[in-house]
Length: 235
Image 1 (tube, one colour):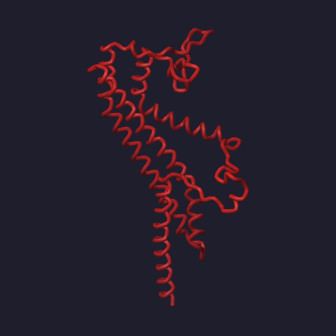
Image 2 (image 1 turned 60 degrees about the vertical axis):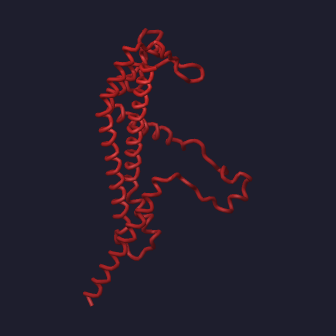
Image 3 (image 1 turned 120 degrees about the vertical axis):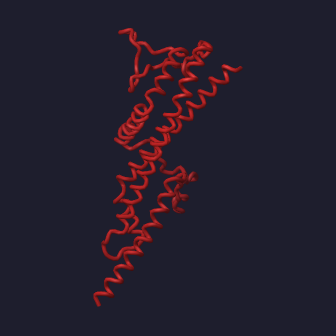
């Protein structure tokens, strides 16, 4: 009898692991897709614009500061990963833009990361004049960007690897929560338990994905700037 019970337990564990693999895979794919929301049919009776009923456009009290702090941390990682890239861009902007000067001290104001703040038009666009760039300066910036891309692309790839590892850890944590023995439960109950068990790892994966995307976009932007400098030299 004990052999039969052990065999049944083995089958149950194997089934749970298969279910966990399927459920976690589906949820992982959901994370890569645009967010969609199912509207309860009863909600459509409340207003003629059912999709906007009870829509919240601001963070809840306390959330805005928390989100701003997370965004700042992500930006800080990018600035630490690519200090030479930001140095090049600020040297270029120093030639074509006007820094914001503290009227009391006469010093240039700086942002959170120590880079100069630049004057803006009422529209929010920066005050800048790229005709100030001489060919010699364009050639220097182009060379520095071109040679820097080798290292920047590798750093962006490392950020992507970290994002994939974080996603893998999240999936493993959710699977562990899904198959954890707690008696007879439904797949839906196991899924919710897995979500709760892996919540912290999920947010870490989201954070690392955001850092990876930011790094990738920074490299692409530098590539475009380098190409534009090259075009202006050959025009």
